[in-house]
Image 1 (spheres, rainbow, N blue to C red):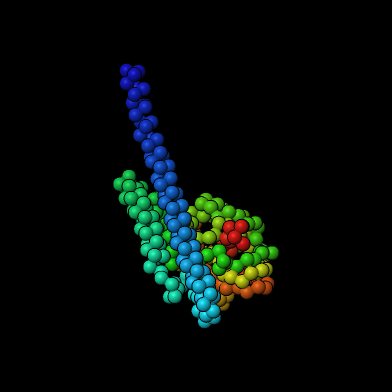
Image 2: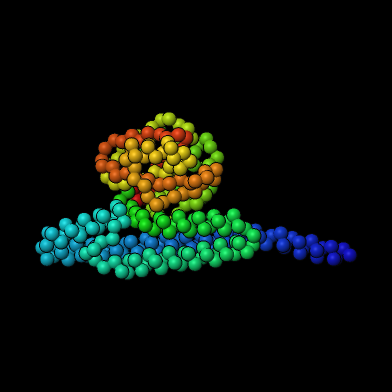
Amino acid sequence: MESFRLILIAILSACYLAPSLSAQETDARIDKAREQFTSAIKEARADLIEELDDKVESAKRRGSLESVEALNQEKTAFMQKGSLPSLVRTTAYSADIKRATDDLSDVFDEVIEEAVKNDMVEQAKKYRDELTQIKNSVANVITPDALVTHEIVEGIKEIAPLRLKSEIYSNRKYLWEIIPPGLPFDRFARMPGSGKTPLKLKVNKPGWVYVALSSAKPELSTPYLKQESWEPTKIRYNATNATNGYFVFRKWCDVGDYQIARLNFSGPIPLLPKAEEQ
């Protein structure tokens, strides 16, 4: 009888631990898929920029000022806005982006199906939401050269790593929950929720300033964004306790001093590139 009881306990323990181990394995698969996707997107963008640079050098050797100017304009448009150039072939670039996205989708689709079969419907919804956000982010081609180089001189608590489960505010328990890969942001400006002190920026190199803003109160955020001239992107981050997530907006800033007004408790929250890329 004692042996039977021990065997039963072992079986029940194994059944209890299985979901935890399965979840760990799933997280590892998703993490690997994210890393591979980010790497593939970065490589595809670098290859296209290299092709544009080669064309510029060729035009210089020919002494064609018009070609040099046109190619540099297309390179700038690609790096700043994601506009595909017309003066070089982009078939390989588009195929690389599609392949990376399809490979990522295959992993997510498998994980979503497994989650549903294991009665983890809410987790499956989160994976589906993340995949949608990642696909949307592909349309926002952002390279480090297109990002502004600036200092935030007032209005924040600290610069924090943009990581899953990282606290968004210094005085509220909101955590980053979904962070689309393939984007050059890995830090953000953490500040107190409900603060009124405006953000003050000192821009040293012109480029795009990116911020995340909660969509909780569109009646306040819509006129604010229009008044402050922020452009919408398709990028969205999710956070715990934030039903509608944080949408990302951008504004082009030349060299100089800028002030960003606060809105409600939620920000806007500056998104920052890797330190070595500033």
